[in-house]
Image (cartoon, rainbow, N blue to C red):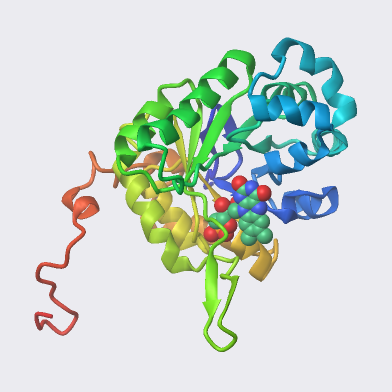
Length: 331
Ligand SMILES: Cc1cc2nc3c(=O)[nH]c(=O)nc-3n(C[C@H](O)[C@H](O)[C@H](O)COP(=O)(O)O)c2cc1C
């Protein structure tokens, strides 16, 4: 009997496949389809700070601008000020009453001063964990990298003080000192880290000579960056890692587990192939485990991490010095 369960952020997940945050996780109907298709946890669509800010009264926006929001006083009034937040809280309640898997709320915040009371509302509503979708675009030439990075620590430290449920942070690979940054983030008391987020990117239409939206869905090739960093970081950070971006099949999931991720978040493949693909992926994992003689994920989880792999240098090699191609010629 093959056991697909895994432990992520203290949760015993029935399998490693988590539905990543997207519009598919913003409505109870589509979440139900994912749960019926056997996802082990769901990350709800992020509530974005822009949404909350738009709902703010001119009075509270004044506080936002000044940065002197009266933190103690704001909590009581936050319900009436934020219908979107209340709808989010209702969705958490519905999910919790219907499904028996972890429901992870997602907040996108880097500047908004109401995120602590919001996170408290989310915790009160019964969310099992919070995933912080954080990204500071380093586009301001007046801000140093240290200042940009400090934002992450300020938010996490503050949240950890106020919130008891597990926290996970979904980051991008865009840090000059990614290893140190990931280590320091993992020391803030978070339970998980998602490597990596994939952002909306602009593209250029050369016929119309205009800026257009890039592809909103990932391709399997994009997994390579996350895989490298899961391998490099999984024995070093003090929290569980979750692989994300470009995971479209059971092979991708198995690679992440071998590199040391405890679970994966998938999104694009759910849009492109539908929830039924989850069953196909789980079957693929099971078949592989059977073929390799494994009965549970623990037996092979992390065996190809930086410290445990036979050729760990491969994770760090990034230049093509000499490469032998398949027919044996140097290229
Ligand atoms: C339509 C769509 C909406 C998304 N919305 C969110 C969101 O609200 N919050 C978030 O953290 N990520 C969001 N994402 C990013 C996904 O959660 C995921 O990180 C990204 O798509 C990479 O995973 P994938 O390669 O499996 O698609 C969204 C992605 C898509 C395609």
